Amino acid sequence: MLMPPISHHMTRQPWTIHPDATVADARRAMREHGVRHLPVLVAGRLVGLVSERDLRLLRDDELTVEDAMSTDVYVAEPGDPVDEVVERMAEHRYGSAVVLERGGRVAGIFTTIDGLQVLADVLRRATA
Image 1: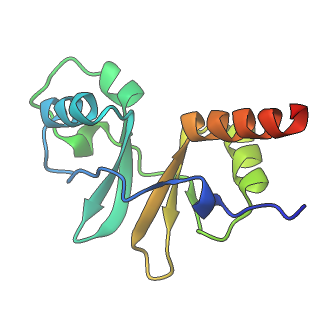
Image 2: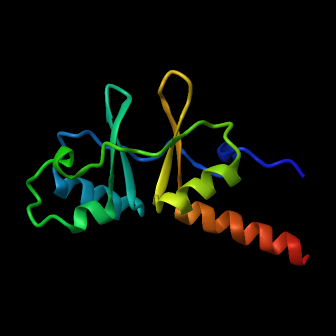
């Protein structure tokens, strides 16, 4: 069986945020859209990632996303094999991988929740 690419399992067109947005804006966006990770973009380019965990560490809602975001973002390409992405996420304890197309446009995001869904699908097929 061929290993499917990460693009088959990622969340396409993820919600994003600008680094100048406030922490309160990021919390609201995550709550409204039911997500825990927001790629941070400037002019369509990835500059960081803010997670629910990053925001939990802050008390001041008027701080900016730039104050809270991580700039060391794990990035994958749409054609990367899902097993390699999952293995790297587990090895480094990453909560997500931002999937970038050539040219740097965000194509999607693959989170630990997406990884669990892949596992559930594999286990269902194995026991069918």
